[in-house]
Image 1 (cartoon, rainbow, N blue to C red):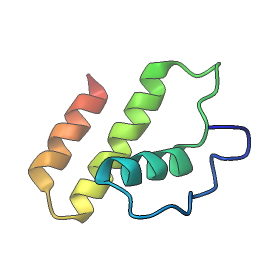
Image 2: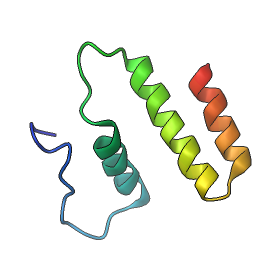
Image 3: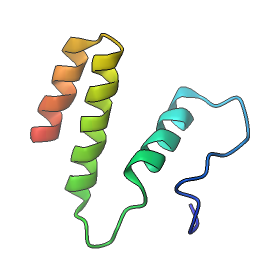
Image 4: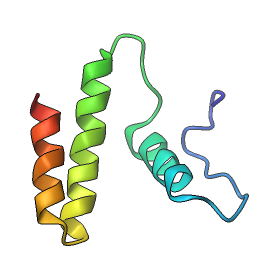
Length: 71
């Protein structure tokens, strides 16, 4: 990802589930800063995943994601 691409969605379609999720995380969490530890980004991504799972009605999986974020 180059400078300025963090907030642009590629126009190619169709996307796989992994590509869609990767683009959503990049857009919502923004670029990784070198001053931020990797564990913080992982924790933020897991919290985002838990919120998405809760919204989709997958409460058990959301709890597992939240637990992973705290470990």
